[in-house]
Amino acid sequence: MISLDKLAALDLCVWLRSGEEAAGRLAITQPNVSRRVRQVLSCFGLRLQNPEREWEVVGPASHLAMLSMERHVHQTARWRGLAPLRIEGTYWSGPLLLSPEPEGWIGGRHDIVGVQRPLQWLREGVLDAWLAGGPDWPDPDDPDLAVVQLCRMPVHLVVAPGHPLLQLLESQGTLRWDDVAAFPSLALPPGTYPKVEASLRTLGLWSSPSRMGRYRRELWEGKGEQELMVAYATVLSEQIAGALIRLPLTLPVWSGEALVVPRRWAEHPRLQARAALLRQRLQPWADRHPELEILS
Image (cartoon, rainbow, N blue to C red; front, side, top):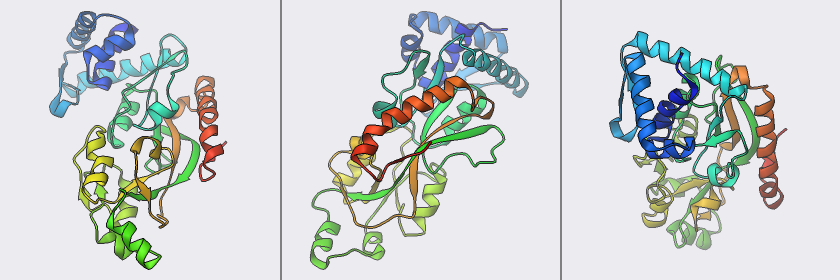
């Protein structure tokens, strides 16, 4: 069996995409991280590669299966308090809800765009929890993952000040979906947020893709400010987005925040305590914005 600290070095490099970031979370030097990573890879006969700046462990399927089993043993140890639990968030939930981290938890970089990577890491045992925006959560019948929903809130269309749609609204007093569809609307590569994508495409939205694997403001809200794009926001993401203005149209999409966790740990006291803390941190936002509804 590989020690907790050695496998943690590998997993944090994969998760955080940086030996320096891993060293900071583990409170060791970067050379120590590199040495532990090499030891784990050598033990399992695997190698580490980073295509498109994302780190992946690769090798024979049987060797990867052994690593997977070891990861789940280590995940059990973390839930039992032998090492810190790991949680990832979004570019808005990270700064608004996950900071500061309570004792016994470590957070990620909170810049992942899309659902594929966090879900992969949860299933592999690299991550223990993911604070995810809805509605692109796992389905209720997912055999491996459970969703603990914390709140719900609507999704709004937003544009930059001075956008022609605002001028049209002022002149005619209302907006139609055809008016909005005449302008480019922000999108991401297919499958990034499949449920959101399907809903918005029915309205003629999600039309101008931005290739963004990690959050960069200039590729998302910044495009809305500079290129007459129509963008999307919730009351929480608006706190990070900057000076964008809502349009008076109701989208058929509800978002929210939820903890996505391995199903076997969904009732664990440490998870329930984390959910309670997050609801507590959501309360001031709900007090100021009644559209945000906290769920028990």
